[in-house]
Length: 301
Image 1 (cartoon, rainbow, N blue to C red):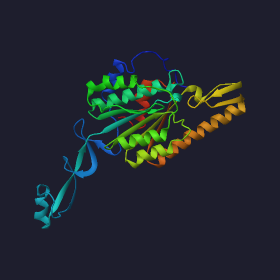
Image 2 (image 1 turned 90 degrees about the vertical axis):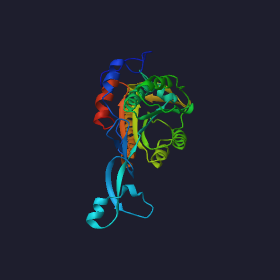
Image 3 (image 1 turned 135 degrees about the vertical axis):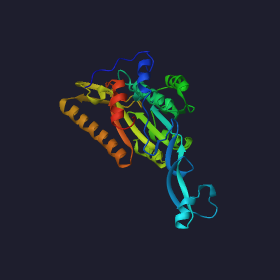
Image 4 (image 1 turned 180 degrees about the horizontal axis):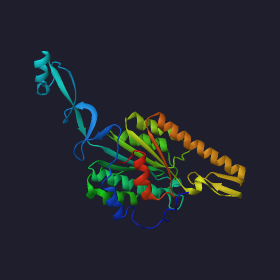
């Protein structure tokens, strides 16, 4: 395992030193690319932006200001100039706040909040529109849209104040989010994805909105390698289901094979649909995750 992350404390989610290292980064969208100025993105839709994209034949009713008279002089036909349309990047950070996320040291939830704060800050310094949505046992809670560096402290306060606990309904939560949200953009889902109802239906709601989706799975070290032995009573953190089991080496091996298959299934589901799947343990140093792994995987540059 990588070196251990620090234990849970009341320390702020982001240190001033780390914030300074984030200032030069930018969130990446496959569907909306960066424009010439911070805060401007150019979508692949044809519009009235500043960057030339293509020509098309003139049709009655088209705006005459975009006729290309030079082309008319050469071909004796009317063509309209098309441009890439400028578009703000909307960054949606979905944080799973269900009871299972409170497990680990540090908890998976704190790790997810740190990641949401860091990615949110990167969006804010680039003048993207950033919003946090909590999806968990307490229902769906959406923050206002934040923009600009001064909004960081309101974003962090929203994260700090999120209620946690209860059994989550991943698909229902993502359905509500998809109905309420507007515009295109990047959706980054921070979760362990350990929902008995599965994740497939929820992701389909996001894909139906043509959103650029990143799934970041966070597991605790004890979930990856339990290291248990003997007779135990195991209780589901979210719905209270109880199972009495005898932990043996063969059972641990089967558990790890099942976990690997679950992770592989999630990764395959995402990759087949043009989504990005990223995995981390709560023991991976948080700053290393952001500055190295997320850049290497294309979420940041």
